Image (cartoon, rainbow, N blue to C red):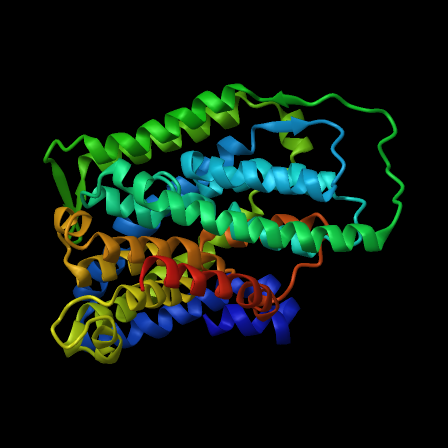
Length: 427
């Protein structure tokens, strides 16, 4: 994680050309001592668990949403005014709950960048896009963000999420969008009159509409794995892989392949479609999923582990959960680790029983859900779409901030909002 934060600051060229090798080096830094102490068999089980249950399903979903949404091109003469930008962010925020943060982000980031291509100040537009579309917007349904999907697979009702996350989403979106509109209006007025390259007005149209059907197929594949429980599983290197999850991944990959075969090259060219953003996520998150294993093991050890202080912080002396601490601890770890396994850790720490959490411990489940989804926006590595949006924006000529530069924005804008949410929902 420090490599991701520091190398782009102090060794830009080395990181850009060799971040995959650096990631592999850190993986070996964990795996080699583990093999020496616990043996190769145990190591293979740990890696298999991380790859089969977490990384591969994660990347299949990311790959499918990226591919299918990349086959949809929104055309039209759009002028990047504060009003239009706010409307695009609002639409993306609510689309994210139904087509995933990755799908919504990949669908709208390029039209947003094209609409603002003549603007001098564009960094804040992309940053707020990451806040809202790539993170906060995915909070309304289990389809929106991987942590909520894991909760759905554990037994959390689909409509529980929609009901309880609705008001937090509305409040957070309203505040963050209002802040954006003020900032964007300031920069827009500061820039003054702008010359626009597009002189002929192009009517709004959508190309590649068949990909919306394929996107529906991705959603169906995800839902099937949650509702269909045949009770069949296969054990691979000590890791049980359930049949419904295999079927889900096959459906998702099939949708992606069909999209690639049926989408015209012209649409991909207009979208500047390429695999670099996916490859960057694939390499970095492979390292995160593997090297996070000891961190999660320590957290799962609870009060008997080296992070017993964190575990004790989220419960009072009677063992009852402190919801505000669950919100902030889940959120903080989600911002710097992966939010999906972090959600599971605190889900199990609170009870692990979905029915109990949805009823008697409903505020605690809400705190875990809000923390894992909302605070994924605090860093570039909090959620996969963050990196992908950053990569696409950089390719489009936007001088995106560094890891810590981005965090300045998130701390100044989001942390006060999260404090307010704490006062409203958990005090």
